[in-house]
Length: 182
Image: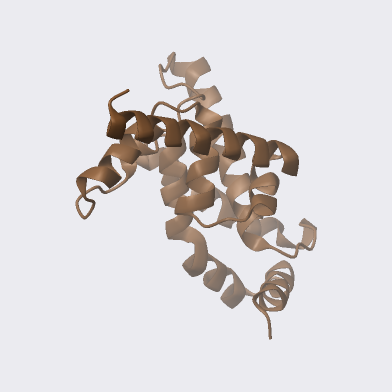
């Protein structure tokens, strides 16, 4: 049985109200979702609430959710949308200074086990645009495919390829410049 067919069956059971399926999906993805959410906002409580809101919605409205073949991008997109709504709402009500354009990849990565060159690469990533950082994170830290990233960000596949290529070229230039000093 392939991973896709397992996910398909799991999602089908979840849509039918199977509590065990919901718990399995939660245990499979909750930590990764919180990690991704912490890249969007540094607010731990907001991130955890958003993840719990997604699973609460799946539990209460599961039968109305369409069948999907790949759970992960669906959950990432749902989390991203939920957090962006929460950030906008907080900006309106509290005058929060948190911006939607902040994707704080470098701030939330544990750099303890990294060597100096790896730390340097992470610092160079912070010079990329928000979209470039987010795509780099999804591709290399969360191991999503380009097609899955398309689903999360609702962008075309060619756009993902172009942005990723441009970001990697920038990183190569930063690294080459550092090594050669030019």
